[in-house]
Amino acid sequence: MNAAEELEEIDDDTRNQVLAEAKFFRSNSYFYLYRMFNNIFVTTNTVTVDNAFDVINDKSSKEEIFALLNSDLDFAIEHLEWNDTFGRVTKGTAKHLKAKVAMWEGDWEEAKYQAVSLIEEGPHSLMPTTEDVFSGDRNHEEALFVVQSQDDLLGGGDNTMMNANYVTQYFQISGIEANIAQGGRGFSRILPNRYLLDLLAEDPNDSRDKDTYFRLKYYYTSGDSINQEIKIYKPITDLNNPSETYTSYYQRLHPSCIKFAQEDDNPNSYLQRSNIMVFRLAETYLIAAEAIMRSSGDPLPYLNAVRLRAGATPVTTVDEQAILDERARELAFEGERWFTLKRMGQEVINRQITNYAGDGEYFPANLGEKDPRSNWKPYYIHFPIAQIDLDLLGP
Picture 1 (cartoon, one colour):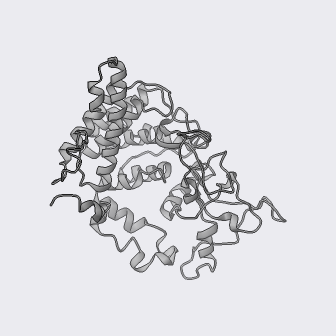
Picture 2 (tube, rainbow, N blue to C red):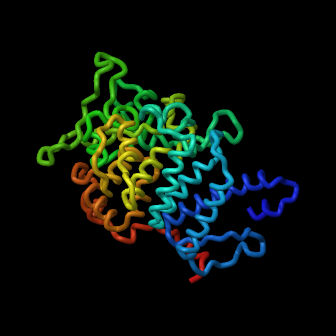
């Protein structure tokens, strides 16, 4: 950024485009670090051989951090265009992030302004159905920021195991093979808890748990039971008479998030190279709903736009819990939940974790000292900073 300011043989429009994109990424990075660790140091100085080993003696204040975030994003919003060049940040990307930053400041009017103007003035729109949101290459009208990837191309991105983390090991069951239609090949590492599953089940017409965002059922692909639902393992539903197969259920048959499965994935590999959606307009709608709820106006049209797209019945009132619940239904496993809880404060975190974390007593290995509902400590609100990093700092 400092170098771009000094370049001479470059026109101002090009310079501002370069600076706007760079300032977006700086603000996005610092904002992520602040939300993770809280104690961070921000600077606009270029690192040189003269200052690279200067000891940092104190964190930046919240006021310093947010002044830089807002300055960078204001510049980005001013100089970026509304365009559909997928893979590049745009005015809409910057406005979406500016709304999120304003939420962390408690500036509800600013958050409302940025979110509503993005929805009403930008070229973006919600995809018609939940099935459309994560289909294909994710480059569509709802997408605000999609990391691009391409096979057999230098710079085309690395393989990841992102999808595999969220999909159960159904293919370990005799009579079913791994296939993309049922989620690809998975590890059974991360799964939706009962809080989320119960939310999705509240409305039988909600499409988000019907093989769009989540898959709840798996089917045999060969043998005498071909095309029949697999029901050989059961979760714990009666604590006094638990299923003898519940451990196998959690390993091989639990509901899976299939947002990151891609149509051209190799079903026999845990690896994939796929476009990754980072920001999308559905979250902008939910930001608008919350900001309006906390300031002035009618939040219902914005929250219900997301519900109606999913086929769910519109709600008639909006409060903080309604926002939390709808964000869970729509944005689960997209990297936003912890930041939302942290922004809302310890009381909300305590309520959500003590009531809803994990599957609690429904999976006994979570009990005792491993039970997040009873071992939560207030300082867990910030992620730890490694000692090797602390050793580089001043007092």
